[in-house]
Structure formats: structure tokens, C-alpha cells
Image 1: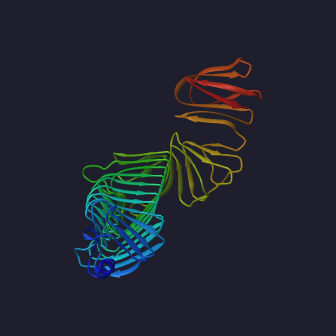
Image 2 (image 1 turned 135 degrees about the vertical axis):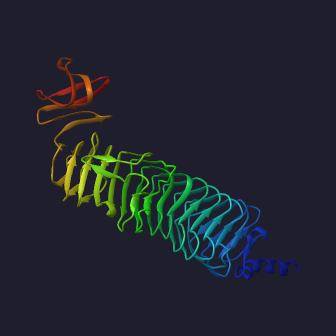
Image 3 (image 1 turned 90 degrees about the vertical axis):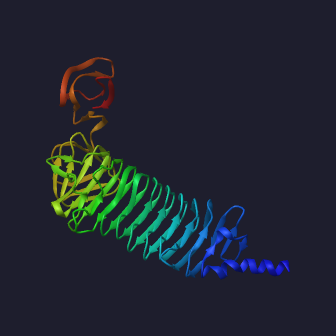
Length: 426
């Protein structure tokens, strides 16, 4: 009798899946393609390939472990999700999962959703949002691909954190929509939408690449939503590609768009960029340019077809093995450093330090380097400087502002600028 009961229990999830797989009400179950351990609330998918009329329901605190390649096709009612967590839900690797769903959200967590270490999580949401949580959402060490045909791509009510991940979203409405905070670090984010904003919320991005395309035709279809209560956007050590090709905006039009005035950029209030390369194509304002803000080093070949802007006080470094093809115009109010083995083809103007320069030092607007028998010192304001030879003799002393040159014999020099010290070889 026990053997028969156990067999029936093992079949229950399979029988129920066509209607509703409610793992929150189920005891242990082990099959060839998945296992459910109720004591640990762990559902392991092992090469699952399932079509279902309704989705699965998991208890608060449940974990889905992916092994191998898994696939779920779930065309459910409008109130059903392909996967629903009744509280917090964690989906972790090392395997992959693809979901095609209609009805409600593809994946719903009623408190928090965590995606960790997934080789690939691919969602095709024919209706409803792709990823949805009533609380926080965390994506870590994962590849996440979301297509949402009618709604938002990723929609947490709480904070969203993305780290060490690749996230690609194609959607009808907002790409990432959250009113609190979005934190992105060491990640690659690509968002393309048809209306509303690619990113909505207070965004802090560090060491990341973001490619945002607002395909809508209305001026309120934008890459970044800045509402009546301005959101805050902060980018540090980032590579941004922002485009609104069909009449939309980079920023929502309540605030001034990111336009150029000579070699300066006007960002809306609450937007800061540091050590960032920003490429902008905004059809509505006929604004096409690539701007360097702060100190930025190219890590791959770059072709500029329109305008290249080095903003005042900024430095673009082209390292060995990297080529900058500049077929447009150049507005250089900062410095371009071409290291030995690097190359820049096209227009040249402003300050360009070639590969034979030595001892290049740049600290908060203060700069010191040597090139062709001349020592160059740059200060952002009037400051005392002293140049001392390696033997200890002071060979130059002055108060200067801006860029000044000092012709000196070959040798090693210590340059004191205010309280900062640099060492260069002439």
C-alpha cells in the first residue's frame, strides 16, 4: 500500500502541471526531469521540457536550481504566471531556463526575487511583464534575456540590483521600471523599447556598459525618465550608447536634453557622469556625438562618424593595440593621450600627447608629463610649482595657471604642484 501511495504521490505534479503545479501544497517528489524537496523548498529542474495550461506555484522562501537546459511553455489564464513565488523566490544556476508564457507575468515573486549564477534565463512574455516582484530584485552573475510584447521588461516595486551580469531587454513599455533605486555594477545592459522609458528610477551605474534605444515616436518616449520629481542618474567608469532614432528623447522633455554647447554638455539636474564615454544619437534634436567626461581609456577600437567631444578637463587615453577612427569633427577641450602602439586617425586639435611622452600624470585637473625635451605642467587654477632635478637642485619655480612648458635637459625630474608630487623622465 505504501508503495502504491508513493507512486501516486510522485505522479501528482505531472498530473497537476496541466492545471496548476502547486508545490506549496506538495510533499517530496522526484522524477527524471525535476525533483521537489519540501523540507528545503528546493525545486531542481533537470532537463525539463514542459508545456502547461497553468504555471507552477512555490511557497515563500523557495529555490529553483537549474541543471542542464530547461524549457517551459505556459499559456495560462490572465491571472496566472508561469512561475509564481508566494513570497521570496530564488532562481540559481548552473543551468539554463527558457520560458514562453501568456497570461500574467512570466516570473512573479510576491516579496523578493533573486536570480543568481544562471547560465541563461530567457523569457518570451507574450503578455504581461517578464520579471515582476512586489519587493526587491537581485540579478547576480547571470545572463538574462527578456522579450515582453505588451508590457514592461523588468518591474520590481523595490530596489533593483544588477551585478556581474548581462541583461538584454526588448519590450513594448518601460525596460526597467522601478520608482526606488537601480544599482548596476560590472554589467552589460541592453534595452530597446517601443514606448515610455528604457530606464525609470534612481540609477547608479559603475564599471558597466549600457546601450539604450528608445524607439518611440513621442517626445516622452525616452532613454531616461526624469519626471516632475527628478530621478537621479550617476554613471562612473561607464560606456553609454543612447539613441532615440524616431523622434523620442534621451531624457524626458520636462528637462533640457543632453545637448552640446561647444565643448561642454548640459545635463539635466540630477545627472552626473564621471570617467565615462557617452555616445548620443537623438533624432529629434539632430544631436549626434560621442563625449568623453572625466578620464576614460578605450578598451576596444572605436569609429566616430559624427562629433567627438573631449570635455574640459577630461582625458581620453588610447592604449597600445587600440585605434580611434575619427571620421567626424573633433572638439578637444581636454587631453588625448595616445600611448605607444595606439593610434588615432582623423582630425587633430587641442592637446594631444603622443606615445613618446613619458611620465604622464593626471590628478584632479593637475597634469605633468615630458615630451621632446620639454616638461609640461598644467594646473586648473593659479598654483605654485617647483621642478627639482634628481640631484636635488631646483631648476624651475613659478606660480602658474593652465598649461605651461619648461625646456630642460634630459633627465629625471620631481615636479611639485601645490601639495602633489609627480616624477617624470625627460
